[in-house]
Image 1: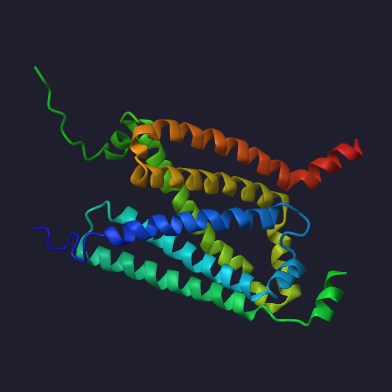
Image 2: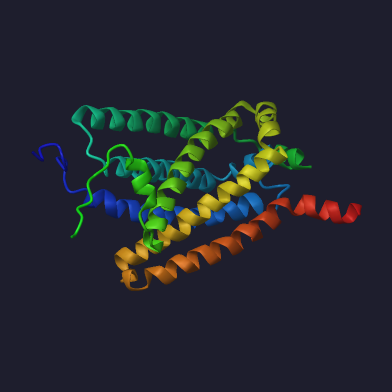
Length: 129
Length: 138
């Protein structure tokens, strides 16, 4: 009768990971909001983004942010679906859609971050002024 | 005589919306709604920032749309979802890991109060340029 329920474990691992990623996301989000909105003029212009992305630390932070956000969000959506008694074909459809769209957009985000060009210090100064 | 309440298939949604809600069940349902809004926004965010890799002109063209007052107000409303989900998320972690079940009602109240304060503070910061402009032009 319960053949298809909890067939892949209790879900306690994803429960713990959901809390840990949530805490990390709140901390990163505070920084993200201060950076983007504390100064409305220089928060997210092309030059401001370009200047930040010269640092690989910012790139790594943003990559982590995209991956963690996507994981936390889609795992959350799946946990909503898990509250309903889905038929096996429904489970397969929902999980497939979440994985396909999640992977596609995560890779798109990663590609966007990695494709931002590195420019020499001289030209960054020229761009800002 | 005690009456047995039967499950009413046709009024299922109505019955679900009508049960008495404590702060816990309000928080639960708002957490889901804000969560769905936030993951939807993350997809939009990745789409809207993708021209970053195509250079300045492409990026500025896209930002032309999203920098309009209409989208700025939407961005501010998005912050309400972010705030609720973050503060209630902290509440959930405290309930799970720090004996928060004993004080979860107070935590819900604090979440709402702190959230409202931060929401209006962010409103001032986001629109400060427009607000200052309004006062200097008077």
